[in-house]
Image 1 (tube, helix red, strand yellow):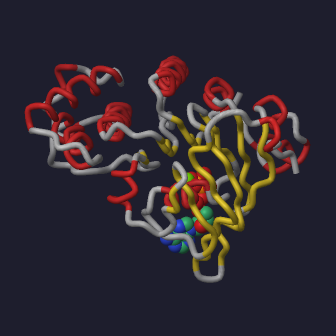
Image 2 (cartoon, rainbow, N blue to C red):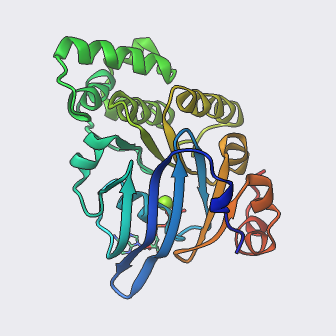
Image 3 (spheres, rainbow, N blue to C red):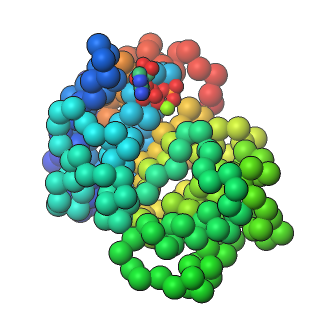
Length: 255
Ligand SMILES: Nc1ncnc2c1ncn2[C@@H]1O[C@H](COP(=O)(O)OP(=O)(O)OP(=O)(O)O)[C@@H](O)[C@H]1O
Ligand SMILES: [Mg+2]
């Protein structure tokens, strides 16, 4: 397996997964995955459908507990903590299927991140200001701030999800297929936005099937297949890895 050598790391360790495993009935959706993510790093997570990518992010964010292994975040063992506690420690996530709070407006939905996503005491006025700024930052149209979630298109929904996650001021952002459904121009904009988020001090673990996005943003790429990590290295090394070509890249028309 192509591995990221621990000897060449210089950054501060933010997230460490050790032998992380999720057993679902008879299926090992994630099987003893080890992964390191440094401060200010963007790591791309790819692999075929059903490889275990979403399950891995769900374990990190506390949506489902691992059956074995550990998760360390900023030096603290957070294995098995509930999602709300993990969010307040500084890990925010967007979802592969963007559906949340259908009756709230885009602004209200984003305010949830500012109000409940961290330990700061935030007034409604400050949360409103924060939400407006964050919606602007992610390119959400001003005139739709008061539109209800159920009346937004998929691109707008993804932007609100991202804004809600960012409004909690995360140290680590987990993105699950943020650019699915976007056209090539929107993909390019998303690459710029993701880099901007990192430049403002947030580390990112991003799942994507669109390889131009992964290659555009990632400092490092990790590949999962059948729940196991099969490669971990610099993007150009990983896309030229024969096992990755055979199990994943050979099947997709993503470049
Ligand atoms: N709640 C669940 N109940 C049963 N099986 C599940 C559940 N969640 C995930 N799985 C199974 O675990 C495996 C990994 O699923 P997961 O959604 O993590 O894959 P993925 O890599 O995100 O795939 P995709 O690229 O299609 O989003 C799949 O075989 C899936 O069917
Ligand atoms: Mg998934």
